[in-house]
Each structure stands twice: as C-alpha cells, then as structure tokens.
Image (cartoon, rainbow, N blue to C red):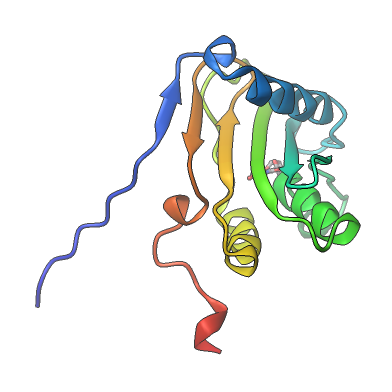
Length: 160
Ligand code: THU
C-alpha cells in the first residue's frame, strides 16, 4: 500500500474588479443570467456564461421544478445550450455566480459534482481545457485553469 496525494491549483482574485476586463464582461453576462434564474423553491439563483472559440457567448441559469429533481443547474443549462447551439465550437471559458435570495452570498460557489462531470465531458471531447471562474454575489473569485483540476479521478469515456 502506498499513499497518493492529489494536488490542485487555483487562482484567487480578491473581487470582481481584480478580474481581467474580458472576464468581467463574461461574468457580467453570468450575473444577468443569475438574476433571471427560475429558483422559486431554493431561492438560490445561479448564472453561468460561456465563451466559445467562435467568439459567441451563451448563458444559462438554474431552472427549478415543483418536482425538485426535474430542475437543472445553471452550469449544465449553459453547457448543453452551447453544445446544442454551436456543436462544432470549442468552449474556452465559463463564468459562474450564485446569489441567495435570503442572505448575502459572499463566498465563491463552485459547480456541483454533476455539473463538473458534465463540463468534463466537453473538455475531454474538445481536448482543450476549459477555464472556470466562480464567485458568489460579491467577494473573492476563484479561477481554475481547467475542469479536470476541479474533478480529480473523473469518470472518462476511455474506459467504456
Ligand atoms: N445549483 C446550480 O445551479 N448549480 C450548482 O452547481 C449547484 C446548485 C442550483 C440548483 C438549485 O436550483 C439551486 O441551485 C439550489 O441547489
């Protein structure tokens, strides 16, 4: 038996203002999407914006349902929208922001495990890392230079 350590590297920006201007623009799209989320049950709004290599952007927000498991997270709404609308384009960057309707969300909110697995599919398919930025409604912004970096030991199609 031997122990294996898995390391990850993240960049932390102090706040939105410290982000490069191009990422601020992408995050602004995510904020607008977040504010239009359909989240009447959790009251937790999430927005995502994606930049593609054809210079187009797509957005997504969480879409909830009275039958709770039928709802979908913002990140998957966005990535499936990108895959459906621009099937040949590569996904370069994704900005994510979340804001509770009940309290100030001042911590960066990472994508959930299911969303990480879904984003990983596209990163593997396109053989190009997807940069991920995530924040709350205010405060620090986390950057991961790839999805794989956020999901060690991910399940890959090469085993099928
Ligand atoms: N949610 C997202 O949109 N993305 C995540 O990564 C985690 C959670 C949504 C799902 C649900 O509508 C609400 O946030 C509370 O879980």
